[in-house]
Image (cartoon, rainbow, N blue to C red; front, side):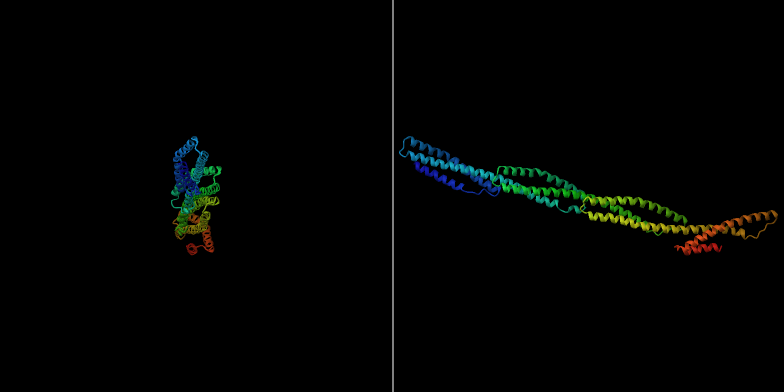
Length: 401
């Protein structure tokens, strides 16, 4: 009976040894957990067989106590069975430790790989070109702030994985080289994500600045459209008063242009500063602000040309006004000069002589005015004035009066 029980226990032990002669430690959390479940089942069987082993040992003690003829064999056989079972227990404890170590590694690996996969998805968002479309840029900035918060909220997860990895390496875990590579990869990916998030945030803020600049540029070009429209006017005034009013308006316009040029230079400097600070669309910004100044500079020529045209118009209308004044004076004095009345008596005759002297003095005075006016008209004609024909006709009116 003793030998039969020893053989049965050894048979069970042999089965356990065969089960433990298995090096697979799993390649995932799920597979390791399944192996641990099977291992716990084995340990439960070993625990359940402890009573049988104790009874077997007590039986051996009883046989030896009763001075069985095979007492030395019984003691040796009992010790061999117990030692073999103890060896199985040790193997089981070692395998449990390795499985638990494998579970730690696989859990850390799963968390790291899930984190890396999450980082990959977020890097796609962080590296997109949505900042180049300035539509709804304010809303995009709000979304990015939420994105930054989401990424920041995962920093503790990365820190925890690093902590677990450091602990495994510190314990000289059998997967330490893989743990080290995995942690390094995670940290590299994480650093790239944080850099990409920061870059996108900066680019979105740059895009917001650019949109603000574009609004200013649109307003500036609208103002230049307005100035261009005024400068394209061919109205030069129909008389002296009208042309003086136009000159006054043009002087106001020139003053406005002078002030506006300062504002445009500020816009230009703002754009240049954005470009110099590394704006992602620096070339376009430099081009647009330079084009704005160039367009404004292009208005200076037409502004000068219009002032010159208005001044020429003023000269013509001033001449016409002066000639008309002289013609009116001639018309007023001509009846007096051509009068044949010599007075009916001495007193009237003396008065008429006095008036004649006054008229001659006025004629002498106006002769200089008339001559100066005609000379001015002739000078305008020689200068190729646009109203030369009208000026000539006007001067001839004086000569024929």
